Length: 64
Image (cartoon, rainbow, N blue to C red; front, side, top):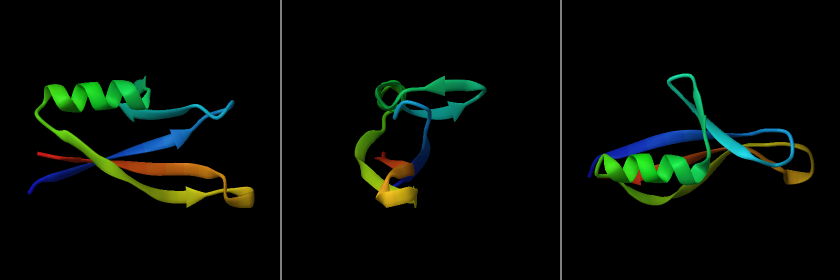
């Protein structure tokens, strides 16, 4: 299987986004764009935690 990882970062207010080609995409937009390319959302992996265990960054995992 072929996997692709997309890094999501927290912004002010608890919103997450992904920087792709100088665009800030929401998780839903990333899923829609990856689905259009033939990938399926498989899950996520926490990458960076902040104070008190707050999620700062995570990778969305897609499989072809």
